[in-house]
Length: 186
Image (cartoon, rainbow, N blue to C red; front, side, top):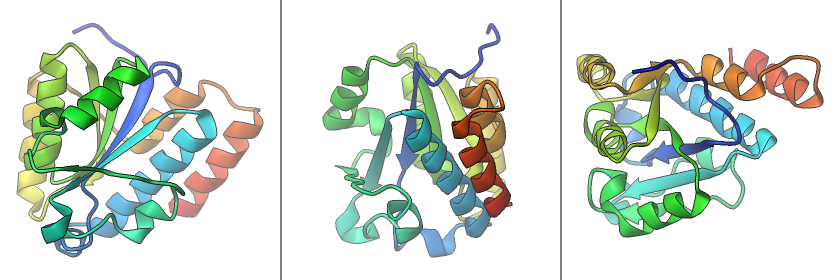
């Protein structure tokens, strides 16, 4: 696997299943939500498209307001497959963007996030999973999922690293806005 930096021109952010009935049970959910908020905020400022999903929303509820409030106009794609790649609507929207770098944040790491990352990598996308913005109910499940993904060639990275790769340089208005959000989110 050759080294690859994220680029705002080639990235899409995928926000997986941050739902009302699931999030209260996610280990370290506050940290995960703050890091996901940072990614969504930065993507918005940098013109990076965002796709969101909801796994069976009739049972698991809608996207939590921590996420939907940072992203006005959020219209998640409903799915029943664990992998986002199993949704025809998701794959159509992803293909229409024409971008090859897929940056993933979401829950649960060992189910929907892993299956999505592995399937997209198998379809020749460059996949980046944001470790500090991805979780599971049990910490061990999340750790094992991230290790497996890395072993399978998926890049595992932190939220700030991804954002700074998108930014590429300091001294811009975008940098100052995103830097302020980083300070607010710890």
